[in-house]
Length: 339
Image 1 (tube, rainbow, N blue to C red):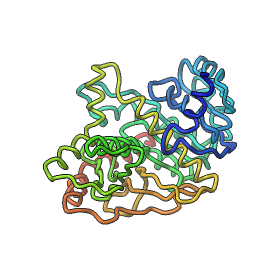
Image 2 (image 1 turned 60 degrees about the horizontal axis):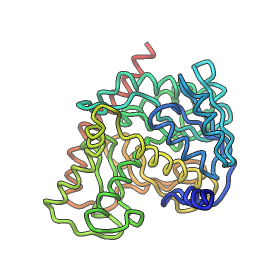
Image 3 (image 1 turned 135 degrees about the vertical axis):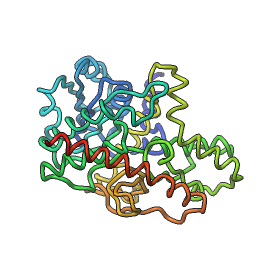
Image 4 (image 1 turned 90 degrees about the vertical axis):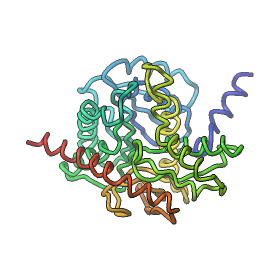
């Protein structure tokens, strides 16, 4: 009875988990033993889009790999542990997802994570640039507003930078916006789609509720409160966990959703659109999250901001200072490492 229940559910966990196509993608998870890494690896192991799953971390990866390896799906799982095994973890990978880093605790902002996570991301993306320079790089590690500029500068140093292949995974902001709007309006969240633009921290998170599909009418006072809830939803989870971690399960879901969308597009599926934080010329900020049309080589087309309401235009303007400062902080970090 169990197999009848589990397998169909695994094949269709949600809007981006329902691909029935197979591919032979080798995917690496860097930080696979952590709070996001383990559930993310489980979701990837469940997907027919993944044929090889390469799990890397500084500890416990052999156990995680052995555990996942007993699951009756096609992906072959291999665990790699410690810096000396990182090159082998990356060789031949077409897509790398990076949830590595320390989580937030109560009272911390994403930017408070910078000192530790900046070094972790720089070291891991340096290895990616050396050992799988053509791979899609999907960074979850916070603060994304700084870790994506770090990734860019590292790849530039190695002469292998391709802006169409480096993504800051901001999908959780979209997932939250869809969920909260559905709750407010009594809709099925799987049928709600809200673009979220800007960055991936606090007021840089800008949900475009005026572009929600289906169209929803929300009074201005509720619109302000809803926007603030979406912006501070990560803090909501950090507080609720009371020091026991941050948003790990929902982030794993969102990370898997983005990875599956990207793999579908790499396999030739047309019309795949996801928001992500990328190098951009859509605003005065050199990096900006917008809806992206994905293709075989990564970003096929940046779909831009679309028509904004006056309220949303104000949010974009208010986000610029913090966004540009976070980007510069990431770029300066890589310059300081080079001295």
